[in-house]
Image 1 (cartoon, rainbow, N blue to C red):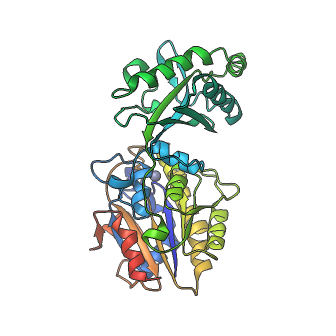
Image 2: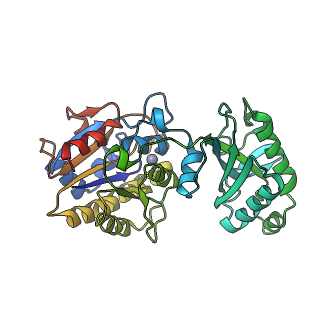
Length: 396
Ligand SMILES: [Zn+2]
């Protein structure tokens, strides 16, 4: 049995007046997702518990069957996982942005999307000057890096820098147990980064200097059972997004790199599907995560969201349906969460899913959309129960 999960990030939406009160999913031409709904069953699933933030990390944990209220420990450890960095049990991992501040104001959480090479040099310098037995820094991509704190505080409250753009950052410095050491590192970084040759060069080129570190999103490594332990199956994950790759890492899934994957509207949809089919040669499970619909929704761009959904449908869902024909399979398609165009960010609420396959019976719902799925009797209020249910139903 082959298990396939296809996630269109943030595809679900509210009815939009400009679309005659239809949703992008309803307006988009999606013959393949409709076929999944027609051949199989539809329903809704609540991927984000009411008391948790509506992030892709929380939602994707639910989708692959892990209760986020138990296993979600923060963004930092997931990103460490995606970088293949194994955390010890006592190590707290922070996302560490290289930010740009001026006169006490958070100007840019990304330092003008600083290049990986430049930021890498700055992080290396920070590690040399401020690193210790307890604290180390690992360079990542662009402005996104890691700070790992041995026996670090578990009660510190940090604020994502993208939430305080244009504000006085003083009020948003880390608060709680262990705040002094982290604040000291941040202050020290500000004192030493400004004059670094990389920043001097950036200032000359009229780019913003990356002149401060901003740690946040911290946590211990989640202590998750792997897919092999949980379901007795092997698998792989294909995504451009670090958080999703990190979840895959902790779930013991292979992380498959596909050339040309961007996380944006120009991503290599077809390559993702082709690599997924190949991954299934020697494995039982594959997850494809496509970020593009979410990006379009964050931008409030209705047409791009519809286009992203149509590309996901034809190039990913269609390619997989064709490739899997004649084999024993279960195929689940869904968004991880709602990203309504009108809100431009993630919100709570149940999302539609459709699943078809050898062991899946047929209901009377013939297309894939929010209201179609809501008309089903099948509604999973605990999102993490959906995949476990489907895998146990289909057998190995
Ligand atoms: Zn998402």
